[in-house]
Amino acid sequence: MTRRDLLRFPVLGAVSQAADAGRVTVRDVEVHVVRVNARGNWVLVRTRASNGLLGSGDASHGGPDAVTLKHLRAFSDLFRGAAVSDIERLRQAALPSIQAAGLAAAVAFSALEMSLWDILGQLYSVPACDLLGGTVNPRLRNYANINRSTPRRDPEGFARMAEQAVAAGFDAVKLAPFDDMPRGASGAVREAFTARGIACAAAVRQAIGPRRDLLIDAHNRFDLERGLDLARRLESLDLFWLEEVCPARPSYEQLAAVNREAKMRTAGGESIFGLRGFLPYVNAQAVDVAMPDVKYCGGMLELKKIAALCEAAGMPVSPHGPASPIGNLAAAHVSAAMPNFLILEFSYGEVPWRAELIDPPEELVNGRIHLRRRPGLGAGLNDRTLVKYRA
Image (cartoon, rainbow, N blue to C red):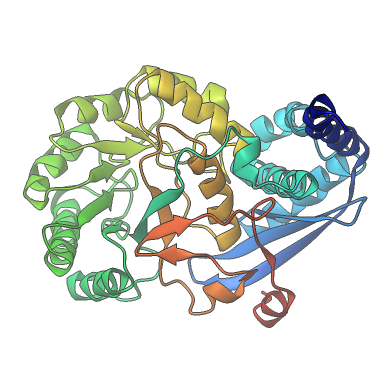
């Protein structure tokens, strides 16, 4: 065998694998709904390919589960029989349904799309991030979102949960302390909820200390005037960012105005679907940090496209996603290949059995995800856990 022959073999192997990808098709899709807490279940998919490989995806938090399940059934019919490599073609075919139906359809498609990347990585024996450009961020910093896991939503309750997150190794914590404010509240009612939320944020700042990062999500509870007032009142807490202050509709003008005036970094965009949806958001300079959610934006390929758009605009990206371990892994693989990655969301403390949902469990050390060099997403769903906590 000559040196030239040796050099040719890897190339021939890659061609062979590519041919295999075209022949491997989607055979069937399983859907599993797992009971989590009052804020919502985890809706998970497992796609089986014609060669027996299994790929996982996350369709959680898209609204009522029954509506998401309806779209999963419809898109499963679309995917069945398609080549596992046909991701862009399937997106184009699903696009009219997603645009017509909204968030529930977006999460259903995104979950199935994630599962194909998982299968493709296994087919080529590489991590999914390698298929998206390769690893530029081998360790991914996470912040602990304690909003979904804090049962007592007052300053003491938030502070206690933040202390637990810090003890678990996180050096950044997020909460949404204004969630209890009724939408459209005014006058004394609005001020009472605003003051209470600021007190919760201050209690968490005291609990985590001055050297860790504090992130606050306003969940669109404020108009422009009150949003600017909120930003001023939060300045002393030295925020890492202030998220989603004003509603994004009918335009991004209010968000952009807050972004221009606020002393701290602003962030948002979690509910926007697709590259075309993010283009006007980025052009308006609505925020400093874009937060596409891999479940909502159209999946892993679309998240990569949106990140590239933001990179061209000089905007960092921090994927939104208080998700299951599968959703978190999908976002992590894209983030690993993202030059403008900033920080990733981790839903802390929702259930004590989170580590049991996937095999092997997430590898999180001091608030950092270390992606294993395992094929695909690097982990599969644990059947025992799916059965034990079935909704």
